[in-house]
Structure formats: structure tokens, C-alpha cells
Length: 222
Image (cartoon, rainbow, N blue to C red):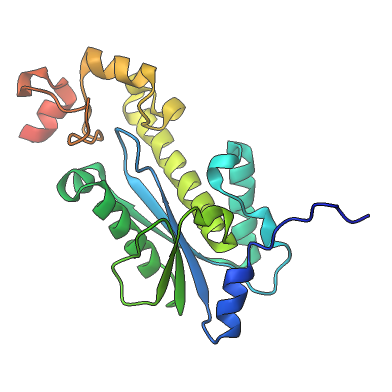
């Protein structure tokens, strides 16, 4: 029996571009603009045109960690083309978070094995690269390609933060992924930032070198 409320076609924008001769079409998104620590990670994804239901790809923020991991495995198995780009905390401090996010997306596009004919980009800004693009506000809910990219970016960044948690267990990165939770702010107030914190973000930067944790002081003097 068919549902009385069928899923919206979240591949219609891609399909229209492809019909107009723009193929392949990619979707790009990032994860990690808001955290106080860790990188910003972007992904660029080209979904297969002839594969099953694109509606399974949804905004990563609406999915459980288990669902994101499963969909990432499905993306890889489907033959989707995936590029990933990263900007470090140091680059974020040097460039600002917007420019670092756009640079990470450019790196994700450049990481693809093919050059897209058109890129659908989540948000209000396009990527600084000479490829035709369309910026889509709330793009994860409008484009399966962007939704797929959001899943890749979020899952990739979460895995990176779990790795950072093993290096700096006192901060609890595996739990909050660097976001400004009460726990994270409390630890920052107690012991200060580590080398993976974004020193340009409010509430992170130490006032004096001596206020910084020993690990950061040693790395800076390195």
C-alpha cells in the first residue's frame, strides 16, 4: 500500500541539472563550524544517478550516530564518488571560520576523482573554485547530494574527534566533539586549552602564556 504522505523528491534539483547537460552533479557540505576545538571537515559527494532511493540521505544532524555510520557504509558501497577536505584549528584561527569552511569544501572538491559539472552547496555561500555552483539554504533537506555530503563530513569529523580524545582524554572530545557544552567549558576553565583548540574563539584563548596548559606551552616552544 502506498503512503498517503510520500517522501519528497530530494534528487529533483540534480535530475534537472543532469537533464540540462550538467553531469555529474555534486553536493558539498561541512561539519564543525561551531565547536571550540578540532578541525572543520567538508565533503563533496556525487551520487550514482541509477541507484535506488535517494531519499534515505537526510540532514546528518537529524540522524543518530549509528544511522550516519550505516549510511556512510552504504554510500561507499553504492559507488558514490566522495571527496573530503579538512581545515585545522590553526587554519581556522588564521583565516576565520567562514573562510576555513569554504577552503575545506574546496579541498573536498579537489579530492574527488572527477571534476563535477555543477556543485550544489549548502548555505548562502559558494566555494572559491571555478566550477558552476548553486548555493542552497537548508540544502540538506532539498538535495540528496548535499545530505550525503553532510553525512560524510559529520561522520568523518566525529571519528577524528574520537582520535583526538585518545590524545587529550581530559577534555572529553569523544563525548561533545569539541562543542561548547557545560562540561567542555568547565574543563577549559580548569586546565585551559590544548593545541587542538581554536584560540580565536570566545572563551578559549588564555590571557597569558603561563595560563596555558603545559602541553600547549611545550608545543609552542617546540
